Length: 113
Length: 115
Image (tube, rainbow over all chains, first blue to last red; front, side, top):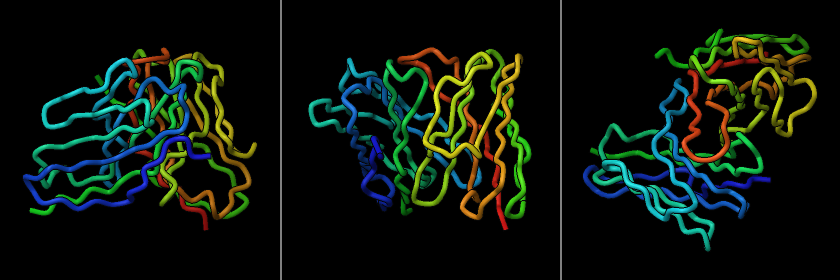
């Protein structure tokens, strides 16, 4: 049962434009959400997170939006750069599951120069 | 501060064999989680260890097991290997406290190929 879903396996964006990566979840108990970025042959690296008490968190070119009523979060990258080309995973956790994180299947982003 | 290390980086085994993978977490981190990554399946949670105790477990068969030592280093064992066990196995360490700011930091992974 996939509790965190990323329905777009891939996304291509022109350099300088906005990249929007989407993620949906089913468990209303999730209260902490994260985005990770992964390059081939490397482990995922933490990018940005958001707590359920917020609806937006910004860090430089990266902004995560959370819509709790729709159980949806998105990652915006503005402006997109070729070095952003990677696979992006969203993840979620809930206090009642301790330290267990649930990951989506990933979206492969390609930024075209 | 040194990152998460995993050994070996690459491994080739044959069906029926067993394998042990090792993970050293970031100093001070008490939680180690293991994930299996296969194409199209994302990161599938195997289990999490905290203070030498398995705290969470995913939906994997009993052939997958793990343990954690007093220095927080962890090992994962897969017995009676099957072709479908070929995957990238990732280890992640964290402080282990629930809630916000408890990010997981991943190692580079061990690429296991079963022939």
